[in-house]
Image 1 (tube, one colour):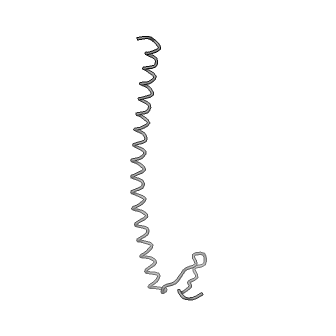
Image 2: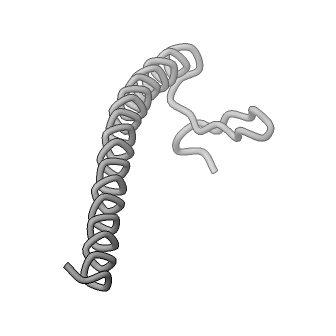
Image 3: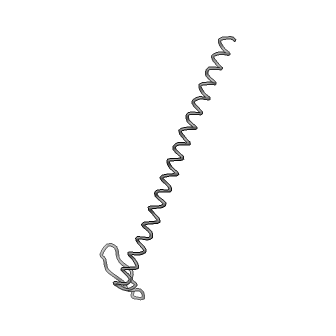
Length: 80
């Protein structure tokens, strides 16, 4: 085999190996992202439930109202 052909063969094999490594890295990263997504989705669902339960307890305590989060002022529904 000529030197030029051997050089090209080596270069193509190296490019192929590099592409396979990059693909492997991408697959690992995707797997990690999917696990993070599952974990965050679980956290969001739990916080949504916790928030709804707390809002329900506030409605029992203060009645159905809107709350100004800056001041804590309550405005009963139907009031201006």
